[in-house]
Length: 386
Image 1: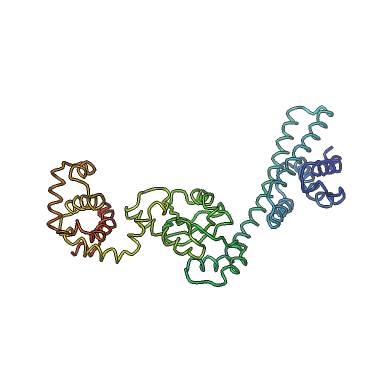
Image 2: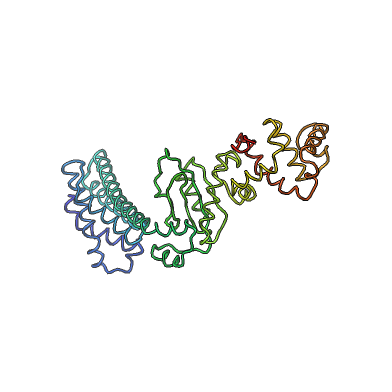
């Protein structure tokens, strides 16, 4: 009975596909048969073999449907049309089988078993199409990555690149006017996740200790969500928007933010937005220069024990920022006003008139850049030697 249905079922499926799948609506019926007849017949014939010999797999049939999926990917098509065709195949086949079984008074138990076999067969064909499609997509991404390597290197080097537009065009990446750079801390022991979930519009450079993702400013939010999903649990930092030729600066700031987070200077947030920490990034941009300023400006404090140095620094920083009265400072520091007066007297002995002069700006910056590290328990070697 099943063999007798091969031709009418092929014609029925072709007609429904022509009616319901938009790319086939304006095609001649004869053209559609040439295009669809072989895979439809192969699908039906292989199901008949399952009825004859029991469930099994045919490598040639699976290879045929993998190639169909592969061709869709290579032509830049989605799987939606193929999924629609598979749905039509499943419904059409089941309608015919159900009708004929009722005509022949086939018991419900056997009809149910036929349905299980049919839908398992359809699922396997759809799985083979997906395997071919995803395999081709992976190859395309690998090819793009090989071509995009020089472009990524040029953007992250920071060196002038006169032919950047041509380099981008050769990779199929549309050069945006502004980008954001996403840095992900990827330690040596961490296994690099599957990057297939990241969009093709993003440029990805996998490295240690940071993986760098470059995205057009207009796509940044969507790309960030995909990065968070792909690198689940790993620290992430995002630069502010920069010109595409300043990509290296954005990468440097994002990486520096992750370093400062590891030191305890920046909060342990899932995503660090560099735009929220501009002053901190600026103060820590040149560690050696910051250490030199600290040594010269904060030398009196470096002679104090750790706890004394921290409370005196917090009091001095708040005073330099607000020039508030002892009661006002005490309220913010949650101590007695007399404690603040005592600390200020000690600080004036240490620094003299400096804390009340216009020259105190450098002192204020030195305190801001160093106090966060002290709070986190980090002491530079030079500071300890002082």
